[in-house]
Length: 440
Image 1 (cartoon, rainbow, N blue to C red):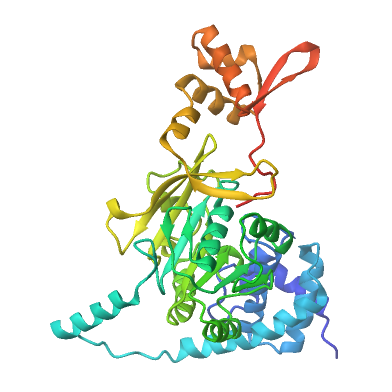
Image 2: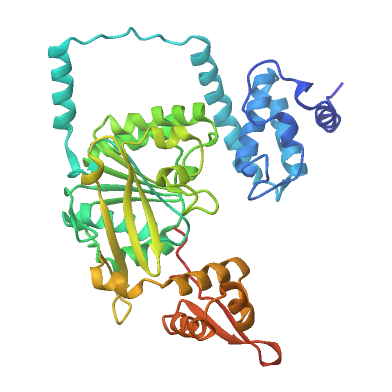
């Protein structure tokens, strides 16, 4: 008698995790998958892709037949994913993960325990010499074969910072026009922006067309996928790549970023690339709210603490009144006083055909610094979006003429917009962030 897949799915939905949990599964609970899952995810699941991976893991752990599990997967997709994932792509993912989960299970069941190696002082000296000989892509800032994170809130110029680093590496120039870097071919794994948005920036920065740049345009690269890593490593060896840029972390794995265990596993995958002598520079997002949530810059980054704990260097990009700042918030390899710290500007040429990323001089920083009244107005407008003159004066509670002068200054500098609302009232709001197209 044929199995009624619809009835079986309803049965699982009612029973929750106990329906066929016979062993360890993905951390997303089975019961959390039986609810509407929009494209961007919900409070339990990051998104449809992550949910499908978790569901496939549950099906695999159940011990059921693959063909039967595939039918359940498609029924689940049609019912709960809004909109459903493309059928062909879902089938391909299921077949691939079915094998990968099996390999993962076997490795967990029979772990290989490596013997502990103890070093005497001469051997310690040898190992230290090897580490010192590893060298730098940028002296004191970007170690060869290391792991570097660059974090920032949205629209703070992170992409420009990374692309300027790529430019410097491809040309043997200076990053931010300050820090000399080693010339090297560069691999750029772009899972975030896409070529239509990245190419104009590359052109504006003046990166030569014949540069040794290997660019992957939203190819779905996953660093926790062994076949993907093998292809990356083969390419790195073939072209002598010393810098691999990843944009962004959340796009290049199928693991749980809130799990220290999963992030430790991801680091071991990254290690395969770094062991070839290539440096990984990884873009990462701050938590919602981002800048200012913590006195320690890298503590503002999203995800488990293991993400930043594994890094050799962490850089945070900040922005205030048009002045950008990059600071080293974590370094294993240089003293705090020697770490990178630079105020810089991202400037368009008059014809908007080129972009220069350059250090800001002291006079420029001083001229853009807001006084206390202006700061209070900006903070208030950011919290309320739009306000009239009266409400601003009530909130700031300063001298009325000083508040008016501060508003005029903010409008003149393009930081605040002045509009005429209903009944002729004057309204103020924050100006849109520079470069509306910039997300990172």
